[in-house]
Length: 290
Ligand code: PAF
Image (cartoon, rainbow, N blue to C red):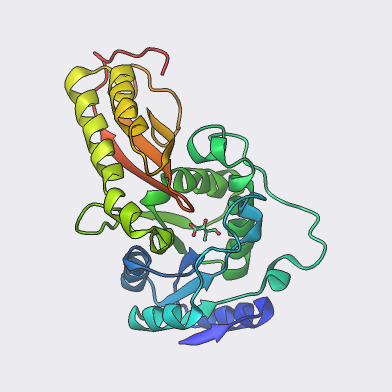
């Protein structure tokens, strides 16, 4: 496994691999790897000849009051995990290497960024698609792997690849969970002991909301009753709980068959997200103003 910090060096190495007819699989991350990332890497390992992992905490996707500085980082630990997962190259650039000192162009998301995380994190997805476009242009892989925990990000990146004609297949990989149901996230390490004990309730709330919606066909009521329960939680505050169509991320209508129930919840220093994507016949559904 080789660690590469310069774009020009990585491009040279990838060209050599491509000259040998090798297929490149790419896993972009912000590091502090966990089992969820390991699962992305293991899919990439199975489906490609060469696996490239990028580790870059991208400043442009963090708002001014967000956790860019405190985002967990541990390159040595990441290197060990990457090596165990059979990564061939880790791309580990500096901010200066990625953006230079005078970036003049960025990519802007025009749809699906006014709901869920896009609503509470203005500009976040513009930062994501800008850095992902740059990484795609640098690595030029056949396939790129993203976790379904960031389901909105996955849908937006599918749109990026379609609309900007990247010849890359985007693979969405299922969410990995702790035994108690908490979705794996690099941010989980920043939960207090009390918050960590409380956090599995996010997945419980998602399951309950889905069940209620499936049983009653009443989307409004399903959301309202889980929200009421979440309001009683003293350890944090609800950012959003929504049921939308997926991957469109629109208010569902009678034709919708694939749904996402998604949550974001703020603890003292950490905001966690989770979701369930599910299919359902919706002809009988009650749709009010959720
Ligand atoms: O999902 C992430 O870790 C990041 O948003 C990504 C895709 C690596 C872009 O910085």
